[in-house]
Amino acid sequence: MSVAVFSITGGESGRWEIDNIIEAVRFAAGRVNDLRLIVFGRNAQSAEAELTNRFHDSGVELHVLGVLPLEDVVRSLSVSDVLLRVLQDEHYRASLAQRSLLAQRQYFSWPVIAARYAEFMRKEK
Image 1 (cartoon, rainbow, N blue to C red):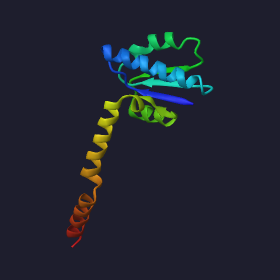
Image 2 (image 1 turned 60 degrees about the vertical axis):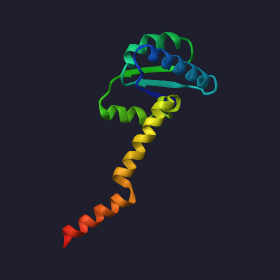
Image 3 (image 1 turned 60 degrees about the horizontal axis):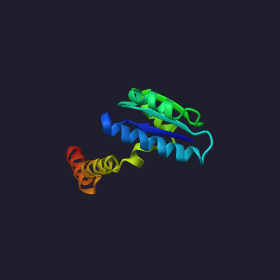
């Protein structure tokens, strides 16, 4: 099983995130064999030493990748079974939900689709 962590907050808030990541992954590792943790994005490499130290002898296979090009982000997420930050960070999850709702309203709502269709039909005449 693979768990991905995309982006760790810097500073003191980051320490809290790292503690939560370690707690969650250790919990999962106690119940799942061959757990792999993939950490990438902002502040991943600055957290690497602490993650390596705290996962030493835990059976967790740790991969710290840092900031990646888009294609590698997609590849890293596609091999992951869980995106931990979305599950742990209530505010982040809420902001993603809000962004998703805005995008849905702006691009995919029925009024928007109908307006685009009407515009297309006007151009075809």
